[in-house]
Amino acid sequence: MIGVDDMVHAGLKGIIAAESEISLVDGEKGQLVYRGEWAATLSKEKSFEEVVYFLWNRTLPDKKLLEEFSTRLIEARHLKPYQKEILAQLPENMDMMSVIRTVISSMADKDTTFPSTQQQGIRIVGLVPTIIAYRYRSLHGDPIVEPDASLSHVANFLYMLKGNVPAENHVRALSAYFILTMEHGLNASTFAARVIASTESDLVSAITGAIGAMKGPLHGGAPTGVIDLLDEIKRDGSADHVLRRKLENKEKLMGFGHRIYKTRDPRASALSDITSEFYDDEEFKLAHEVENKAVELLKELKPGRNLYANVEYYAAAILRSIELPTELFTPTFTAARCAGWIAHVFEQNENNSIIRPSSTYTGDIPAD
Image (cartoon, rainbow, N blue to C red; front, side, top):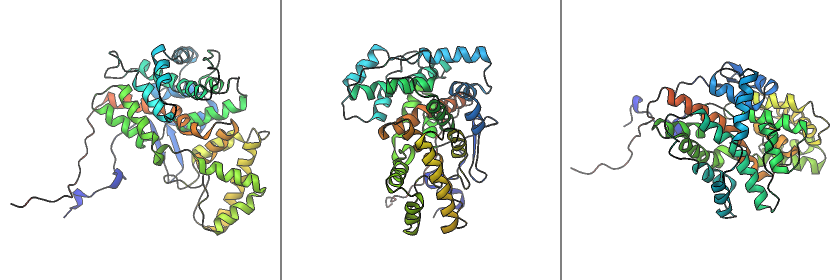
């Protein structure tokens, strides 16, 4: 019989496994904090490069430090010849997450040691968008677009993917998405990275493991349900008609509600504020109109449930607007989350203790 001290917590739910200064995720209050700063504020006022530096160094960079950090990220964008050869040899039917994992795992060398260094982190963050763009264009027979050192991290990703300099509103919206999804507490992939790092393994191994966790649909699944909902409303021409029918049929509204946040997802609020400035963009305008109607109907038909749009909802709107293929949604999420994984590996390295939970044996006991 299992006693109180032996209580099993499936999936480690409710178990505190680490102390961290990196982020606070408060679902009851709808708060997301990065190192003492509101993540929403950072997404509106700072660049992706600034926030990565902040997560890794506990302070925002001054102009000189930002220039130096950004330059190092720019230099890390280029694939090495052996990495291009790996990409060329991978099967065409290999999914993008497996491609990213394979190329990142190839980055380990004799200098990739414990504890991890910021230069190792920069090499990973800088390269993931290039892997995605290079692989995608190769598979579609499009000419490879080399990195542009004059563009920011996020703008360069879109440029390498699309082949032209992206619109300013697309860069701003996607940059905010990158900032708001780069870190979110001890989620499954972050925990995987910390477990690996706790064995005094290297950063490449930890990030490779995190990518493997992110690949699972229960964690990094693409917001295709939201895309389908918005497309259906676009075809029908009436958000009220589609949403009301779904709610009356007791169907779930994709992109509304969150297993952690019991009020509006602060990441969705920030993305809503930013995209509201671009109402000339048809996709952003549709997303706002649908959200307003959905919240109105949810209050009418499901009173007391407090269901609001989550980050997945606005992620779908942004990724639709920049015409990102659905197959690249989770890889793009991964390109953002790498920064958070690396921050946690650094923190694990600073005060390390191997993560080794126990299990309760439920099998048979041999007879005497």
